[in-house]
Image (spheres, rainbow, N blue to C red):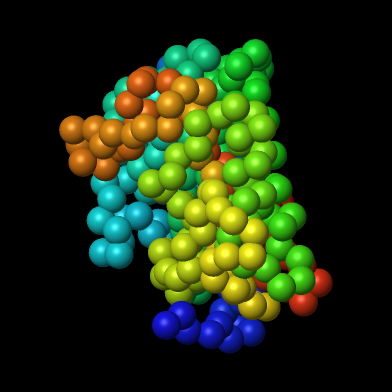
Length: 250
Ligand code: MG
């Protein structure tokens, strides 16, 4: 059973979401050819502390060996920061959860290192991000998780992208992962009915090739089986009386 949030807890998620958005926005300027994943992880860790927040991945709830997931090219999510140095043109996904005043927020984005996205990569990035906003925009009036999934799936399918099905969005707040599940596919009118005050992470992941995935040897990193490039965009949002509020956007 998901606990109701108090007004103070909702406010904490607003403040924490803003801190998370600020860190991810500032991170963009740290990403350049030659920087290592571990250097970026250390920078993020320092920023989280500076804002008075906690790196959730490093807590007992997750026990991940890093403050942020840094997934490069064929890696989709959950990749451990290593001494690998980023190269111009790498496609990099950053996924971060922080805790602030006891409440968690979750957000992710994908970018190209030191270059403007072009061609198929531009299509992958634009379409995956657009599918996130289609899912968010589906939240108005009574909405079920299947309505969100259907909206995301339509954009990704129209864009001829592979839709990762094994990894899905989720409730977030007191815990990093809580009910309900929010798949990136579905049927309108099905799934869990959301109510005002619910907070969920919506996070489409898509590929330029097949949607089949593998877990890499480190036991954490999820990658495409065919080595195709992938993208991941995520926001934590709250259902409001009027529709939706994006908590992890500046
Ligand atoms: Mg996330």
